[in-house]
Length: 279
Image (cartoon, rainbow, N blue to C red):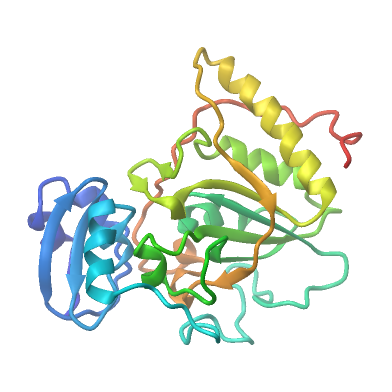
């Protein structure tokens, strides 16, 4: 059966605002419903708990981690990753390298990867985007693995872009302005290490720009009259593992549940005079 939004809302008070994150996949009977922390914790026979089911709830992750055991990953890509010949739902371009000559890559973690990919996939100059898992301790994790909270992966968006049309600084401006980089392992109601803020650089110039814009944005935050400090990690790009196909370009697909867990602060980043910032 397909569990509808109305049924989810009746499961627990306040669940409606989280039901938008359920993937809509068919599942077996509902065997548990708990309202805990930032999400509706729910298990389905024969299926991994969905995004709405777990979010980042420590209670939910501990419960499902206990049922399914420690995540093991796989020596090969997960079977429901996009196929090698898959095309981007919005741009129609390739989802796998090799990319056309002149393209560069960027990788960001800024909360729910549905939301972060939606910010980048229609930007002029962006050739392709993919969502996946990075920075963890096992190979080829599934969404279920990551939801246990035991793998240390982050939900990330990889952006393939033409630097002649859109600069890395402009991509960073979107990153800083469209989420809250001061909440450790959290965006809005999404909580867990997979929702941490991160910039994963591919070269020394990207690193230099990330660090310079971080310093500028910290000043912009302080200009709002708050003492919040940025917790964003800036580290070399780890290996990228594709997330399941149903996560890719999720917000652009018919029938997707409208959801955005990002919580921008309202501060603005000045990216002028960055041409001289180099490693």
